[in-house]
Length: 84
Image 1 (cartoon, one colour):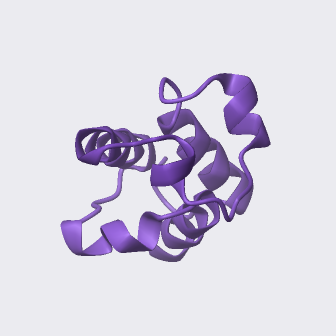
Image 2 (tube, helix red, strand yellow):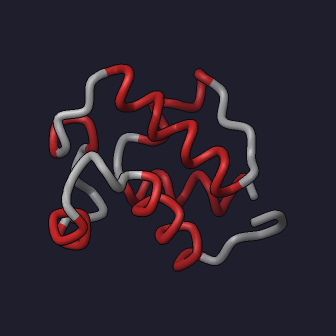
């Protein structure tokens, strides 16, 4: 997905990267402002796996310093759309 992503494309990429950590139904019901780590019980390795998947899906570099900016789905979408 090189270039600028729309908010809907960015949200799709984020929710797709989260698949496997929760059911599709749970992901669909997950509010944009819910903290991902606590809502999905993500440990550090799970979160890193999510970041790697999001990196591949968006073809953008996500540095460790950016991780705090990726706490919720909404924050991830904001980050991806602002950076792409």
